[in-house]
Image (cartoon, rainbow, N blue to C red; front, side, top):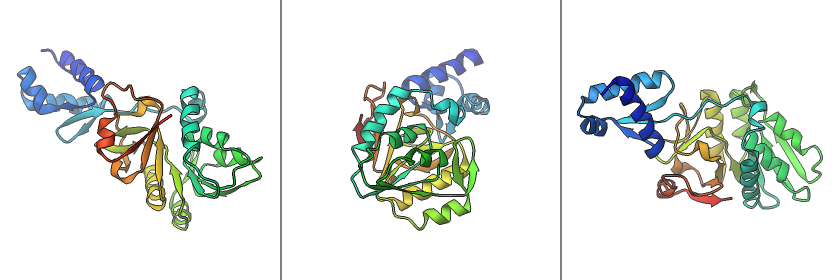
Length: 251
């Protein structure tokens, strides 16, 4: 079997099954495990997959900039946001992560609902200009422009003084074993601290983020409350997430 054939077959397996085990492929294809590991190592260097212990996982695609993402999967994000709103009770402190899906949550919060909304995303805070019943706490720090959120020590210090009732977390990838991940180390640290401070954490996910992995860990599935998804017709289903103890909210 030619190298390019093997590598295309590895990609096909990742797409179909969500993971590829080096030992199993070596036995199936009658090649050495070192050969498969070398293939995976070089494919990882090219950004085609994510190397993990024993094999590989699908790599989450690189996200475009914040302004471009606003126009992607808008109907799906609207449904996710509507489901998120149903989880909020009047009087709560709600932390909204940066991102275009959480921005849609902000747009759908009823103007008559009294809340305290916390965010480290200045563009999201501006959504509440005309919400008379909502108090906004804007976390400051260094602006990470790709996601338009504040990061750094100042942001961490402010977050440590809060105890949100519910946190809507945005990530670039989710996997039942590898957990919730994102592409930037410093942004992941901010997200992780908010998870630790919040009574409940829900993650609204567009379907292309499921069963993929990004470089920086935010939280394991056991550390969050639930995922919000639009449907359950993923090829491998959502059983692995449920087995990890995660509540599945279907929009």
